[in-house]
Image 1: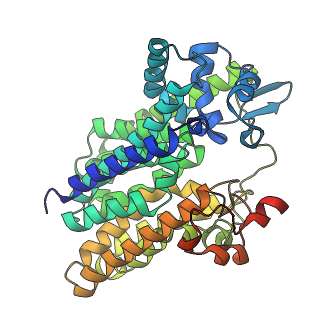
Image 2: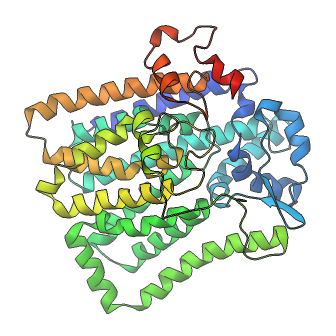
Image 3: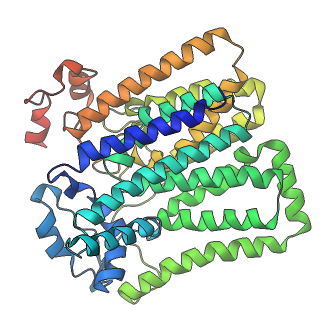
Amino acid sequence: MRRFPDACLAFIALVYLLFVINVKFGKDRWKDIIAYDGKGYYAYLPALWIYHDLQFNFYPAIEAKYYTAAGYFDYREKVGDVRLNKFSVGTAVMMAPFFLAGDLFAHASGAAIDGWSFPYQAAISIAGIFYALLGLGLLRRIFTLSGVPDLPSGLILLSLAFGTHLFYYALNEPSMSHVYSFAAIAAWIYIGQQYARSPDRSRMFQLAFLLGLLIVIRPVNGMVLFSLLFIADRNGWLNIMSSLKSRPWRFVSFGSIVLGWMLFQVLLNYAQSGSLILYTYGEQRLDLLHPHLFDFLLSYRKGLFIYTPWCLLAVLVSFVLFRDDPWRAISGIGFLVLVIWVLSSWSLWWYGGSFSSRPMVDYLPFFALLLGVAWSALRKNRIVRIGLPAVLFLVVFVNQVQTYQYRYNIIHWDSMDREHYFRVFLRVDQLGQKTNPNADLLENR
């Protein structure tokens, strides 16, 4: 079984690549690889490398050339007298090596050097696969450090890759920020575990680098700082506190690295608008006193546990840790409560057109670690050894059916409710039909 997790990763890589080649690269389907919010996350790269224009004046011509009216999305926000990119730059930083490879291929192949022709969009599709696999590969190492046996490790990786909305956002919308946050958070957990065992300066600076990067991908990702209690476990946390107590200057170095990333974003804001501090989300706000917890988790519109039941399974199984590892249970579940509270407090709690609760893709590594540690605690239980893999298989099936339904608008991108959800729930007999059972949502909303 020692090689089982590695074989699982190889299988995931093969299926992901074949899916993208078959589904995204054929005919004109590649034109929606960079789409919706992803246009804004990505736009920094052609703006700086090709157009030298941080006012994004090239946007209307690109929109007219590559997108239909249905795919229209203006990522520019008007602030005062200027229009600027409303999204943070961190996702573009992680895309940059792939963008440059696409640019090189575009020059070599004679494709349009405009940032949106096939080589560029294909490069971002490959970026989505790469970062999904990077995150999964890091989770494989995290499981090893956490004492998770190889069989549960491989099965969790398979179920995460095919049984959650990571599958959709890595392969269908790779220009969105989520798969990049997923990989960076997996790296944060992995380095955090190593730092807890040996709290040296190098690993602390790596954590600072990752925290700063996560903040400029999505500012709310700064919450991961509170996950160290969970990542480190009790003994590791004591190691960290002892090290910092004897070397308090490291706080300054850590903060300086994080602030360096934030300064990068501030300078980009200034280059776009002449202002250092900007708020680009209009009337949308974070209201921590009024979270939409039920809607966020259990609504038929976007409920995480409805559309990604893998997360519900991970939470339920992890409750065994209250008996076997109370520190991990309290710190892990407590951190996820914080994440859900904050993300559900956004005024647009459903996060627009999306599959499931899309910001939770970023935090799937925490669910995976909880599930892995809990499974290890239950590994001698015969019912768990047989039953849990069976339930994971069922969860993968549910996710694949619902992902297909979402891709073809059977599950509406914004307006699902109980009636329309159960009209199509697991109706595999409807897949591939020319008529949409929920066509009334497309007509009336």
